[in-house]
Image 1 (cartoon, rainbow, N blue to C red):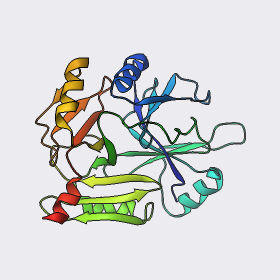
Image 2 (cartoon, one colour):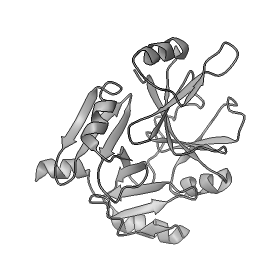
Image 3 (tube, rainbow, N blue to C red):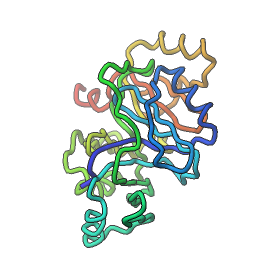
Image 4 (tube, one colour):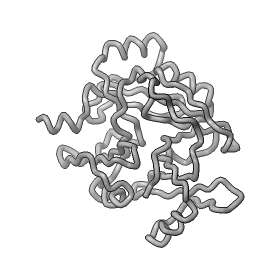
Amino acid sequence: MLGQYLEFGVHAPDIIESLAFYKTLGFSELESGDIWPHKYAVVSDGELCIGLHDRELEEPTLTFVHRDLAKHARAMSDHGFDFNLLKIDTDVFNELGFRDRDGNMISMIEARTFTPPDEDVERSICGKWFELSLPAKDAMRAGRFWAPLAPAMIELREEPTPHLRFDAAGMPLGLSEHNALQDPSPCFVCDDLSSVLADVERHGLNIDTNPRYESSFASIESPEGTTLYIFESDFLALEEDE
């Protein structure tokens, strides 16, 4: 139903500063088109793509591409979806937006806005991206909203705090009740803590070595306010091993 995962979009008041930050972490800047009227850039580690938008976004946005969006919007409306944004016409770039039950914004557009990353794009110093975590007041209730949109569930954990992970059209999406998670946040696995700390210290980045979200050993905050969590291993895999 969602189409294909495109990007994790954020409001970047100073795109140059945000670009420098992500490039310092080892992300690559991708070639973007001129579809948007505002300044726009995209960075990627080969899997996670982050769209930096110089326009007011009320919150981070999960963006997907659906090529027959006008027809799909009508079908979604028939199934009870309420849109916060709906721009569907013959002479505009079609897009729509709606929220999940916790207020997280989901966007769908009719075409890609940047060139996909090459296969040889290297990972960032954060490691391998394994999930985009969304805060949820009630993960099971949130899961019932997401299940028709992303019917492929990857993992489910009930204790110590409920956590569901879906394949959302190519994006590993986590729903978490953990009280330390405040905003949608990318999560990475990196088993070389000393290397991460050395790189962060060398570049003078803001790092928290006691972030408290799940079993993360560090978090790094970007200039626009995105928090990137770094783990030694996937916390859901840890639960299964135990």
